[in-house]
Image (cartoon, rainbow, N blue to C red; front, top):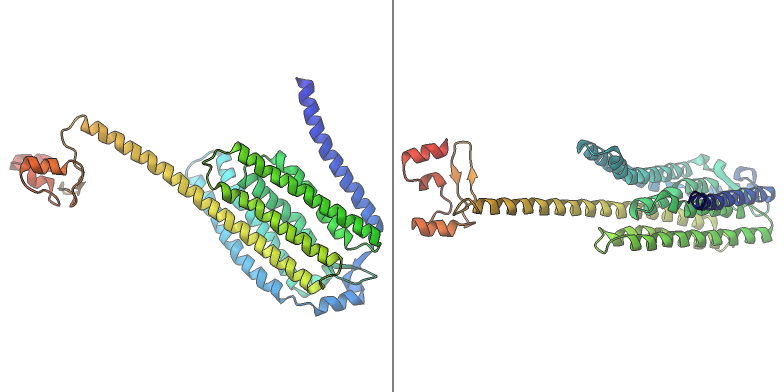
Length: 370
């Protein structure tokens, strides 16, 4: 048994080690042929950059700042609510992990958009000497940080998959992001095509892993799972948006679109991606809270029914009423409980009156009020 466990663990570890080694080898080979230079050192790239508008980056940064503020307030509210309920530390951590990841994603994108809106962003652009087309290195750096967080958000927080299961698509995604950036900065056409093909293969591999999350989630989840479709939509949204990213990248690498349209498309897609994820997880939180409230309401109703059964086992008539500090027991205006039976016994209507008035003598009224 120990040998089998060691073999399984060793096999999984070996796969990850081989993947990391292959990534390092590919990175070294890519760096060997990389001909990228800072955009400010190439006149053609500098003229491209000066002709590009940066104003929309500032608008997106302001919108993301407002969204980030909202998510931070939701994170603090979740933390204080969970802490106030004296839940175990693991429960508090699980409740805050998703909102925390979403805040990190929005923070990274907000900072990158603010940097791209500044005039100093030219220092974070690279290009090749032959073509002079600007390549936004800071955008790829932002993807290297935010994309794993988004995948962990959808895979671990939405679909409840273990961290070991979501590791491989995340690592593959990191690899093809680096390869995609390197493909834009090599001069050899054959090497550029090879890197582009490798990047698209990596996207397909990572997408297959994400679809595997969905299948495992559907297999493990009961048929009445809370907001099942919403949880799956978080993965579907990422797959579709990443596909549009790849299409835009394909247009850029084959020079079908100009640099201005390329950067605008990336900025709009990044904004839509983060806003969509924020909306999805807000809806998930609302539906989970509603589900918990319905369970709590059902429990309270069940306790009320059991208490009513206990009362009927000891008393002939049970009528709800509201008591005030003065000892006055006010009966409901609308007939409830055994009001109709009591009216038949007394021979008079009692709806809306006080129970004190129905007592026979002064002594009984005083004893009841006491």
